[in-house]
Image (cartoon, rainbow, N blue to C red):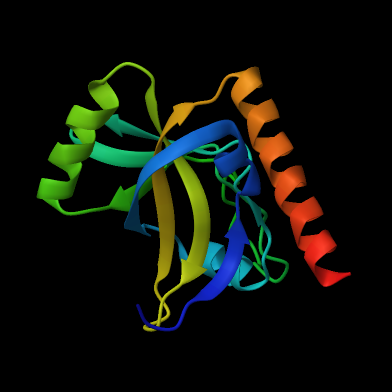
Length: 150
């Protein structure tokens, strides 16, 4: 992988889902949206990806209006098309069709060629007891690390 400039990450994704696979997809954006991304004015918290009519879309990705946009008004939560290869889309379609799988955004970044890319995770939802196990395990690791430092 080349140089990445992280714009935003969805830390809740790994907390709420078991991420089994990740893919990189391009975004179809308007010019003012790219400028808003450069100002880090977005939220991935409620976003999710769907496959609709053989195309991959991201819904509820919030991109705030660009501060110097002039007269151009864009819907900040409009569905945006994601760009993946046909083979990747076919593979994702089969995996998402399985019970319990969903596509969640993990991070949004600019790659080395300054194209906006989104990292999607193919995940299964966690139950509350799974989350409690993860928290207990993380606390245990921290205690071990602190004991080793003293």
